[in-house]
Length: 79
Image (cartoon, rainbow, N blue to C red):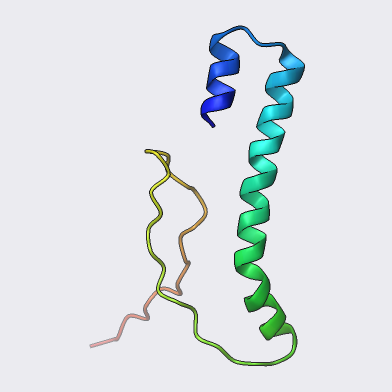
């Protein structure tokens, strides 16, 4: 990501900036696909498995959106 910032700061050509951004995004998506691949394969063939504990990843101060797990709301008991 620092390369993209350097290109922007040094007035790199728009094509170089765009190519570098695509390269960074492709690398990040490939990493996430490699992590998810065994879980998807197991679920496709009906094998049960436990998800590992999710650890927060430090991304140089960046925050990730969409990594939160949605849970069903708890039912309220009538008393």
